[in-house]
Amino acid sequence: MSSTPERLDGITEDDIANYLVHTPGFFDRHADVLATVQLTHPHSGRAVSLAQRQMDMMRDQVRLLERRIMDMIRAGNDNVAIADKMHRWTCAVMLARNASLLGQVLVEELKHEFMVPQAAVRVWGVSTRYAGLPWAQPVSEDVRAFAASLSGPFCGLNSSYEAANWLGDASPAQSLAMIPLRLGKSATECFGLLVLGSPDALRYQADMSTDFLVQIGDIASAALGRMLVED
Image 1 (tube, helix red, strand yellow):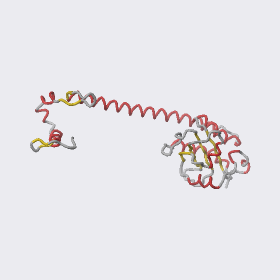
Image 2 (cartoon, rainbow, N blue to C red):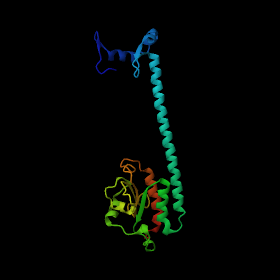
Image 3 (cartoon, rainbow, N blue to C red):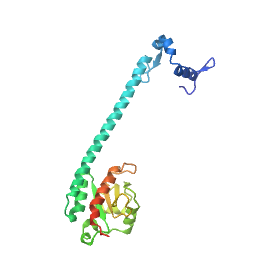
Image 4 (cartoon, rainbow, N blue to C red):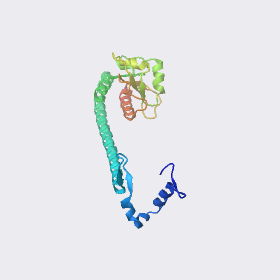
């Protein structure tokens, strides 16, 4: 309906539109009107019949639905591919029977399966038998406090975060995903931090979905949590 309806003897376009909407029998009584109504085609500008215009609208709706379906199929395929990668990575971590290699396997397989350019992990509070391992080296209180403050994965630009130094890559990471490690869904104490980095500033963005990163954190926590000092 027009926002500035024209008036014809006190009757507006809105009045006519409302009448036709609420009087479906009008076109039954005046079927010849439907055959003579001409509308302007939205793309070509030429005059077309009402039936042709309706067909065009239906085609547009079908195309829109087709695009939505294809988007859903692509998203589903992407999720299946990610799930397969998650499965292979989890199996590799579970098969790392040597505790001294666990951190290395976790990181290297993660980089391989998910094509992550840079990755590193640090844990604290481990048993003395594991204290000399690379992934159990001391970290600052600032890093511990930052990790503890995260309720879930952090994604965003690398604003000179201290944990980014663990990546040790010649190309500085422009974006980061930092995943706190905790045992159990209700656990509040953080015992580690998994850091993923990329030279691509758009790889890890603040508004991205983190569902799979949460799963990665859960699996990494379950694997590395076995190395903690027992209460």
